[in-house]
Length: 70
Image (cartoon, rainbow, N blue to C red; front, side, top):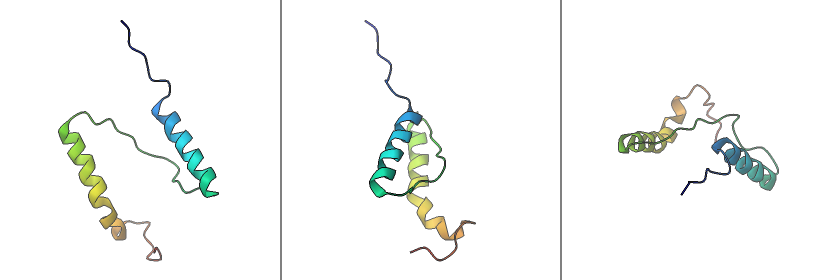
């Protein structure tokens, strides 16, 4: 018995989702690119989780921070 391959690639799904959200919002709300990763181990998961959890607190240190954001 064979296995079936996914019908769409990750980039296709991301592109579709971004297009639908943009149409619903009436304007582009996305950055140009994205960085995807495959999480293979518990250590990978914890590293990515920690990054997503702590990253917003680092915004004021970012070179793109202007101080005018709400």
